[in-house]
Length: 223
Image 1: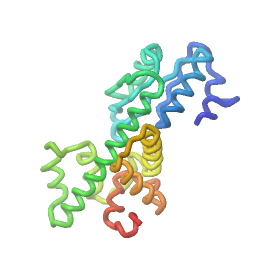
Image 2: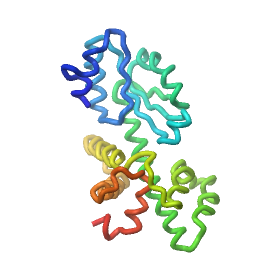
Image 3: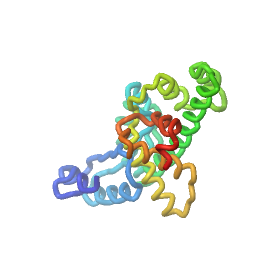
């Protein structure tokens, strides 16, 4: 991505001073800092603005943007981001948007493990899984994943809102950042292991709710 943006024929090479560059991908915080520095040399405002909300949020215009960059860049970008999202957060300077997205992915992957484990337990116990989602989805254990992706799991609908190959990539970056900061995050490590195994076994283009497959056959996916 660095070459696409900062290379000889990259995006920044064609931008005029005073332009705005907004990166809504999920990438390393260090890359966001590098891109912002390169943009500043050319007089271009830069914002790292990764998103959360999946296909549901994209269609509804309710995405959440986690932004890192200067106040000037944030002010310029906000009107455009407001069209696509319902929650626009300025987290600080360059790279802070990407760090916040790492927090998001760490929580999302651990939450997904809990959701699919809960539904696997419900199925094995002979419960109506849809009724379980309805019963606990509005309580303290409720979550976006349970209420939006839980019904897909019950229907065996593994079409992607967010693909496994992308989650595996994001979790790998989060592990690198955690290691750099001296953090031991066992939940993140387990989720990365499971998603990496699903990717290895050909499920990369499936949705992240396909994590249920790994728990249904731990002998295959956890070795």
